[in-house]
Length: 309
Length: 258
Image (cartoon, rainbow over all chains, first blue to last red; front, top):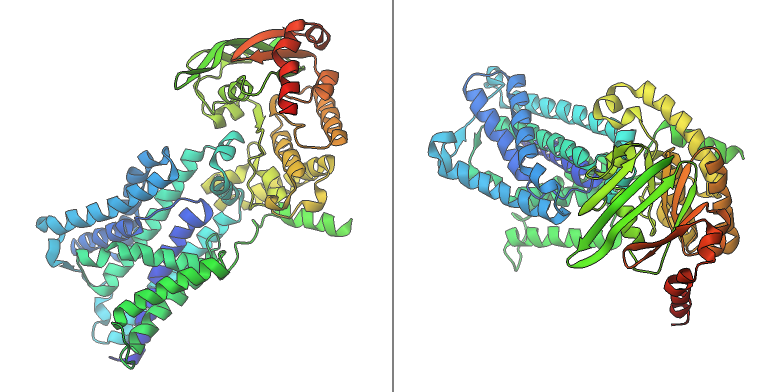
């Protein structure tokens, strides 16, 4: 394989996973919502994009459609679970992911069923030079990551972000000091799912062929590993986690061709990720990057008063 | 004129009648105390008022409007604030953020304005910072302003819980044992502060076991026992009633030696 394309490909995947871990950071890192069905919304975005682009809808239309579909599903699925205890949200989202995958797999008429479905390239004009196609994809992914990151960073360091963090710390107390907790949680899950849908759309467009086996629950767990390693509550941490974990994933895949191991190298990789999580949780439970304070004008003002007195 | 009127409020927890046809009034501008033995239903009554628990029956009326059936955030929206008995702080947020969180009507609290009206809410943040600073000065928490609330001592947590209710600028403040777990001097200071706020128009409804402080400041006392309001009156009247000693003060002494 062309090494240039391999490098570009790696960073396209880093970017797609960065979108997923940013969305999980909004839900879990900031608001404390354990969404274990990330892959469901990723998949919803991927299939929506595929069907729309096969129908001739242009790039941005597909992107909006993927976000909308995933966001609506996110609201529908999670809203009933929001009034229950937190662990129910995890159960509901986890099972929803599998249910959706099995439906898509079984319904052959919907999108190819178990055989999968091909996705038209949005960069068909560049098809003669694969490096340009990969480059264009990387550009599209990077631009999306930058936009989503800026958006989430603005939210995280505003009174809105403070409300989310308060809900994470104690949602009864947040309600008792006047915040409509259910509304905030619903907004976060719709927004988080929409971002995951965008990631799914970009993924489908890039790989050009999707089937239900690409959307196993392991995708969700992979995103969780990224966020836990990078630092929940910190958007930079979500980016860093996606980079570190995806590079480790690629690095070990290359290394296994050159190493003689006593265990199956694929299993070795799983063992390694397990070990990574244990080490992080033991020695750096806050992740590689700490959460840090909510940065608004109030903090600056008070710290100036403190230093002057 | 009574600000808050409870009529025959009841709550049953799985067969246990925790609050039983409780009726009471909190006059505007008063400091009304609620006392009674442990387990008599005082905290539950506060939770009922604040919508944290739904009553089985009866009516709760605040400024002529019914509160029962409202969610806690809506009750807060009516002008009430609540300080929990065991502080429920946002422990990983700074002391400052804990206070700012409780302020009413912040522009930056909706997603759209947080993104697109930054100037507006940043100006608000600066104004709120001044208010929060004054509250921290009042409660002696200024030094800890930027530290996470988890670093506070037990007494300081209690103070921050009260501070959060103060930031809400309520009409009626419900305080569940504000002076529990703080030293005697500070306990008196807390009540002196509350008394000052009361003279500025705040109404207070307080659960308290530290009678020596409460009775110095309260206008009216309700005594609760086994879910019922058994006695009410001005502090001197309550102190003069034998029932007060039978149901409560005696019981406290027994608990203390046990």
